[in-house]
Image (cartoon, helix red, strand yellow):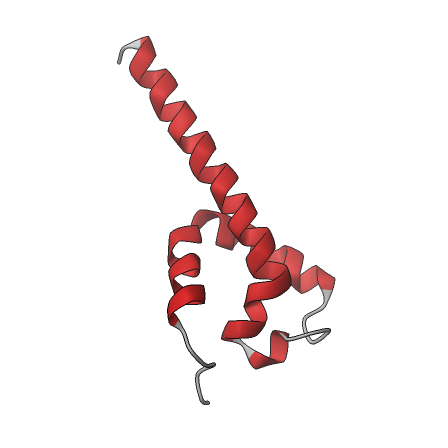
Length: 76
C-alpha cells in the first residue's frame, strides 16, 4: 500500500469518527428522547447516556437516519 493511500484511509477514518462523535453527543443528550419516550428529559441518567456513546459513534449513519425518519416513538 502506498503512503498517500494510507494517509487517505487514516484521514477518512478520522473524519468518520469525528462526525460520529458529534452525532453521538447530539443523539445521547437530545435525540434519544425522540426514539424512546423513557429517555426524554431526566429519564435517562448521565451514566447511561455516556454508555451509548461508543455504539452511536460507530453506527452514526444509522442513528442519524433513525433520528430524521422516525416520526413518533414505537408502540410497545
